[in-house]
Image (cartoon, rainbow, N blue to C red; front, top):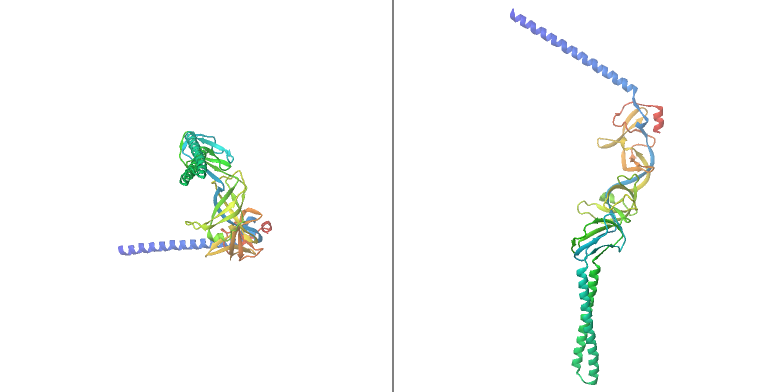
Amino acid sequence: MKLSRKWLALALGVLVLAGGIGRAIHARKAQQAELAQSTASAQSLGVQLTERDLYTVASQPLTVVLPVSGNVVAQRTAMVKAKVAAELLSLSVREGDTVAPGQVLGQLDPQEFTLRQQQARQQAASARAIWQNAEQTLRNNQALVQQGFISKQALDGSQANASSSLANLEAAQAAADLADKTLRDTRIVAPIGGQIAQRLAQAGERVPVEGRIVEIVDLNTLEWQVAVNPQDLTQVQVGSQGALRIDGVNEAIPAKVVRINPSAAADTRAVMVYLSLPKHPALRHGLFAQGQITLAQRQALAIPPSAITREGGHDQVLQVRGQQVTRVNVRLGARAQATAAPDQMWVEVLDGIQPGDRILVNAAGTVREGASVQVSAASAAASR
């Protein structure tokens, strides 16, 4: 009797479990049917698009540019150094001061060099007196030889003495000239015009020979030095136009390629390209700037970058044909600027779509291929 009750309880449990599973399966099927019905209803209504979601492909003037960056460098700079070792008595310029070529900037202590100049001049005067005496003796001996009072050998000695005295005079005079130059070198003079970029010594310091005192930079002759990869270099030519942008300056500053380095850098294999720059208050020596070099200008089909997707290794766009979205493979060219609006970037299309085709732009990442779309009349007119 006890065994029969156990089997009965077990059978009742199995029946309850089977009923629960059946109800769960029925509920799941009902949910799937409801979801399919809602999806079909949504597809029948179509995806609603605004005028900003569509772009009508058209040909437009493009400017192909090469992004570059590099330093702004002054073509004329000068590091003023001490030509003699002495104490720096005065230095009248500071950073930012404007100087002219030949302007005296400061003074080194001239006392030692003044004494050397006096010594050299006295030695030159002594050598001149000795030479003059030797010349007079030579002339006298020449007269005595003609009269037969001295031998020719004595005359030769007088000639040698006069020649030696002349050589000593010339050496002493050269030493005096050198002393004069050394004294002049105690003045610190600007070799070029420009502005003081660095003041590297202070009054009272003893400056060694070749010691740096000030740096002068001429901002009237600036150039932009940029590194270009070898694969892009073939498109860059002397005379190509460019532009750079500086933080805080709204307008682009024009530039022009004037030189291309014949050698590549040993570490990066990049080639330096030099662009001339106009005088501009925002440009400074050593400033880092970004910009571009114009490579070409042409008329071509172009689309916004936001319209491009990539799948399976192919560049694609979503094209609207009638009221359905179709994925189309495209072959792209260079990234370029719209000539009429340089701040807008576009991508050149070489193949895959034609002028007049409508493609999705901002909605390209949210609308799937095959979806039905609804475009209002205002949207369609705005996209054309």
